[in-house]
Image (tube, rainbow, N blue to C red; front, side, top):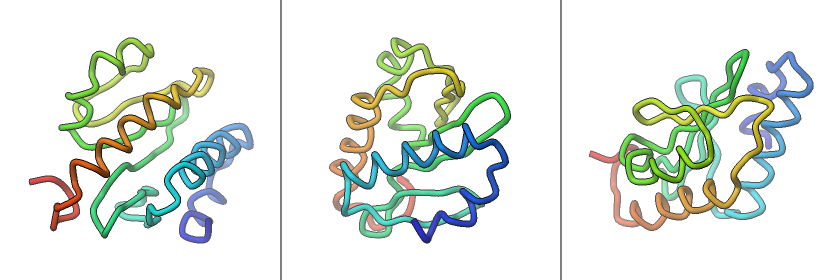
Length: 123
């Protein structure tokens, strides 16, 4: 968690901090080969130096960004989970449950889809 330590330490709300740590730990346990990096002030998980998923927090929600392409591809499932979304970003209110099966499918898709990707983001 060293890559994300300063980011996590900067979260003032203990409940929000615990929630984001829970999610990061879940990703580490389920996808142990992913790298961790902070770019553009956001914690991101990477595979062979290509972006897989990033996170950010706000007062009323946390967000994850798996890139526009993946949000569009999983849009029906995102909406079934009740999450708000914009282009490329999925918002989860702090009180909402995390749909871990959906998160798993999105991360796994990005890993597989970007196997031969040579750039950080999709082109």
